[in-house]
Length: 298
Image (cartoon, rainbow, N blue to C red; front, side):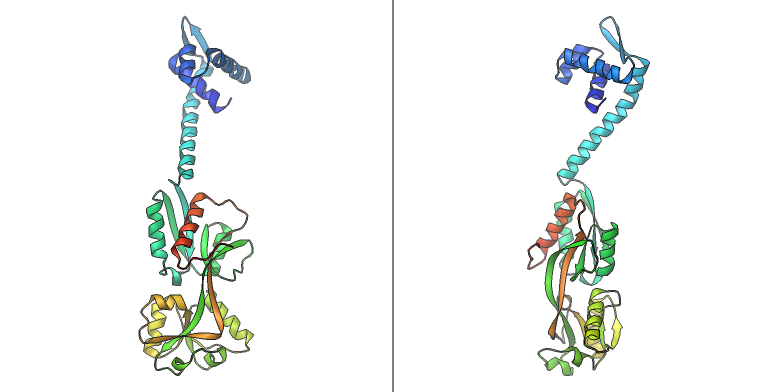
């Protein structure tokens, strides 16, 4: 017995007449009678008995009707919810964002997404890029903003932003007159940057190790404006992504690129070879449209 046949049984019980039920179901009376006999043969019970011109359910028929009301209702609800998903009227997406870049374009991106798809529940989770990669892998986050190169296996990436990590210092600092700065020159002073466990911190440490140098990190924080204020007040350089610096008030500060450059490339990461809902695809498209300038997908 399938859902179509169950609906036939429900209509026969409602009308108490085969002919009326067949007309309401837009099928022929012989086809409806044949379908009922088929179900009765499969179940091994009689579903209806006739009293004159009226049809009544048997005890077995009453049991089928009792569960049939719930089953057909649930099936209709399933069809409606599937249609809502298809038309983007419902759904849930969890987006992972590193705290230091959440202010860059993302409030507007999130606002526009929620306005465009009010039925989709969008949740935000903040953590470091590497922790977010693991969250995507274990399924607690659908997609995340991470820093290239992505280190976790099993993830695919879509390029998003390509820029540089820079040295930020006051205009009266000796570095301020330089066109570029090297790691060797930076190693002569202490500096501020993001905490351990964050991709920028890890990249800086790796570059120092590769150069055979020892970094002297003075302060760490996820708050870019705090680090910039520390640089402004204490004269301690900060090593930060250029777009993060540009977002905040950097009055009295200068940005000096590294030689060779320290790249800062953001990407959208998602789990490879898994189903991606239309809600997730819509969020990815919204992020790509909202970041200027957008970069093409790989």
